[in-house]
Image 1: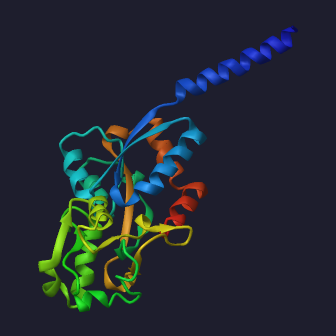
Image 2: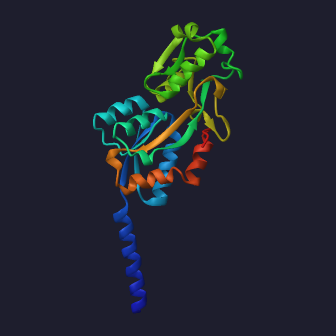
Image 3: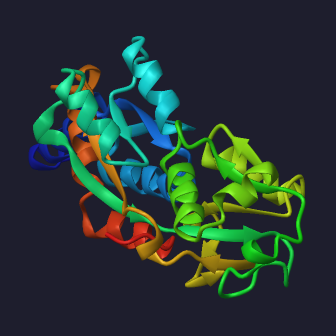
Length: 251
């Protein structure tokens, strides 16, 4: 074996060891509506960078309370833009790291075919016992649902039928299980390959509620950590944007 070959092999080995040594984990709090795309993005992120994103999913409002109480999250992907802005103002996140990673869409959905019509007229007919929404104080998609019903002049009529999930994930579970015949969920939860994958749905017109701008931010625990910065950068990449769009979000 020649000296040049040995030197080359040693160089490759050292480079590989350096990559392994540089690889790290990043603790990420993710809004429940972004569960499916983030799982895919995290897998792609690990392949591309060597870093591992450890994901926790839940309601934005609940994550805010946990972060304020010292939860060890390093990056926060919220379901709104207000909560990350509030954390920045309170000194809990880096202002320069905040950006909008997706704009969500609200959908009225039933797990059964023929329950929800294409214009959402089912809300006016009211021939159902339970309508699921996410808790408005915890989940921005829940707030958007309340705003939609208010704009339609139906909030007072529908309030007795409402069942609230702590997060949009739990709300989706209510509808999937049949505990609620229909509910307001995130389009990403029922969207695949450019269409609603099952059941029946009405995509709520954007004019009926404030834009659901979803911001990401690097929290105090993640400042100065390469894995946190790498994830924030990867979320802006064309590869990540393609995944985000595939689940019905705007980027």
